[in-house]
Image 1: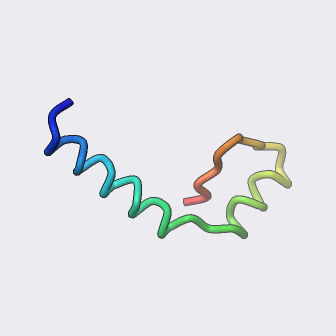
Image 2: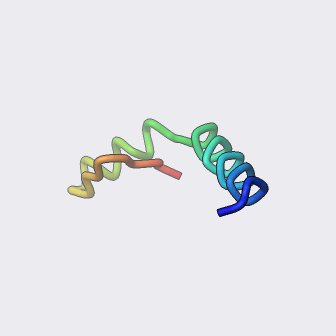
Length: 41
């Protein structure tokens, strides 16, 4: 993976973190969808 692609990937991951939704994630867990890392988006 070249540096430009790596930087784009890291930017995308950071934007996902900003969209993480605690209530959405909790609702999914309540319905039996337990994931180690749940973005809840």
